Length: 219
Image 1: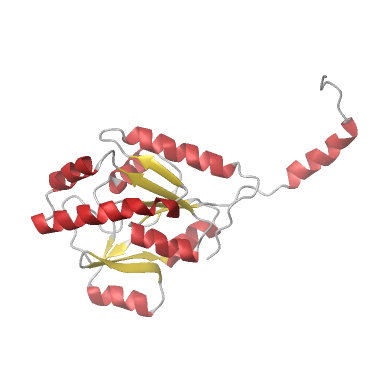
Image 2: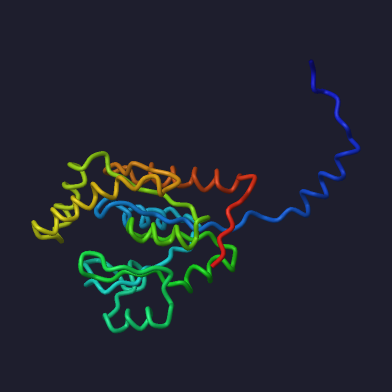
């Protein structure tokens, strides 16, 4: 059986359909995973490599760490400023995490999507679950470490946690790993393999752009 013959009468209709087809809808990519897994490092590498996303900046009340920049890594706010954002319904989701408040500003997401730009937002697993309830058609990616032992090494290297704080984060990480069914994709974030992680995210975005039924994110 061969497939050489074709019905040329269909070609004008197909060409017309292609010309009139809508471009792919902008994606909202939710990047999550346990504390210390490397979410910030992955986002920094994506920026360095010029990946064309709008990087949503989370608001927080936690103190700024060395080398962090306000408005780039986070919007660092006083508690009263954060509370005002809650009162004004300016946050897509917010939560108290390890004694500090974190929240995702709505306006940054709506601005990017309205311009047709893919947006990526970094949140903890609790935040990802909250966004899933509001925007189920976002793309949810879970970053994990090769092992809990590797995650512990990374947290210790960061030197920002007390012994009790470190133990709490590791305990929470074990629970968060059980939340994989919440996510669409999982990527193992290996030490010194950031480009590999970025390549996998690229592949996910490419696949999503080829969906027959595109995700439609409306806020």
